[in-house]
Length: 151
Image 1 (cartoon, helix red, strand yellow):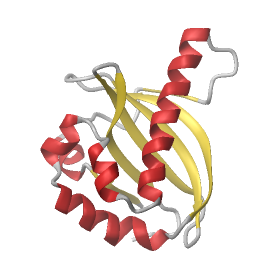
Image 2 (cartoon, rainbow, N blue to C red):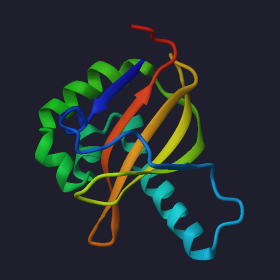
Image 3 (cartoon, rainbow, N blue to C red):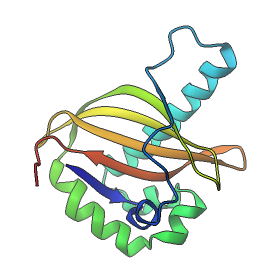
Image 4 (cartoon, helix red, strand yellow):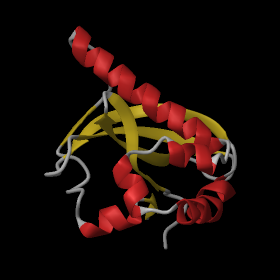
């Protein structure tokens, strides 16, 4: 089951097309500039996820892209985090799975996908959607697929 943890409004309005127009495993023979881009995207995603892991909802909200903050209030974000993410418990491991891109007319969105084991859930696929604002990767979407829930 796919849980849309945040950016429900954006995903429901169709601003993001099908999950990925291109997906690839982490690069093994990428060019230097491609590798630097992958590294920067992964670092931005991991930095943001650390805030979420610590249940620092305000800190996570502050590091999101403008589109996130236009579509989702801080109060709604906190409520979603406390209801959906917090019960999963602390992170036991998080491994990079793949990179991807999202086809959308308004921006160049990139995805970083992880497989994460939480204290109370295992093998959860987390997707962090990023876009650049002023040369900085910012989170514009996040969701996870939880195989333990088959609602």
